[in-house]
Length: 132
Ligand SMILES: [Zn+2]
Image 1 (cartoon, rainbow, N blue to C red):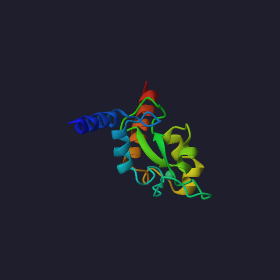
Image 2: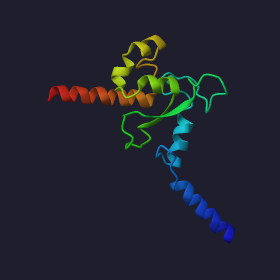
Image 3: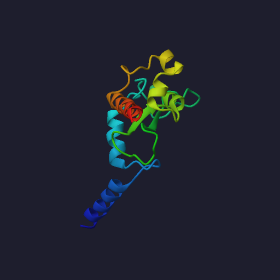
């Protein structure tokens, strides 16, 4: 009985727990299962780089729309450290058209479906703003 209670408390703690980016555990698990490859350049990501080797392929948390308050499965993704630092605070549409992306072959066609949706939404909102 005591064991069951301890287990239940443990489970509740895990369900409530957030990582240091404020992402709840359940969402972290979901996104980790979905984004094995970088959502931008599709490189197979690693959890951590072996000592002394490049960190480029290390998985990093990304807010697709650059707002840390939007913690949804549509806005949280994993991308490689290289793409994360290259994109920085830029709008998706601006970054994807950058020389860096063109050079690396990162295009609207190669990005993950979740990023294609976000890019389309961004372009639509820019279009709407121009019409007003
Ligand atoms: Zn990448």
